[in-house]
Length: 141
Image (cartoon, rainbow, N blue to C red; front, side, top):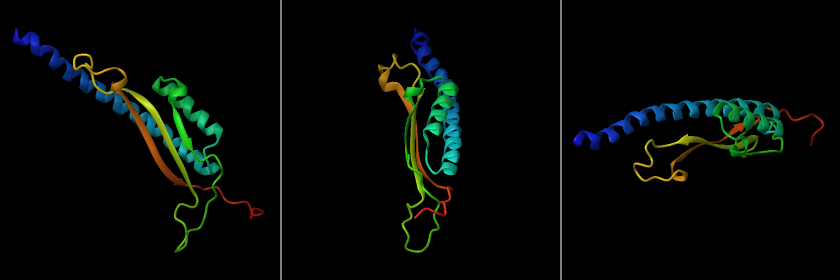
């Protein structure tokens, strides 16, 4: 009788370990894709529409999610590389970006613990800034 009561709880721990490994792998895939897109954006001076679409497509294929669930907030106007000096604005020449994507379920056995499906979704967010490598054209002011 005690075994029948304890067995489902013990199985949840086993499944939770597997779920954590899957989520960790998916978070790594997400991080790698965002890093690659950031490196391209550094060269372009911003997250162009082409870079955004490629990132959405890559994440959609690798994570098996709908491209519309990938949220990207990033600078769309080109930022040029700047030389920093004492007293200059440290945010000049930086490209800001924020990418968010749902990774999957956070907890195994959610029904056993009374957790709803929408409360059990884990999202990964990467928000950062990166210096632009786009050189200002000589004829620009």
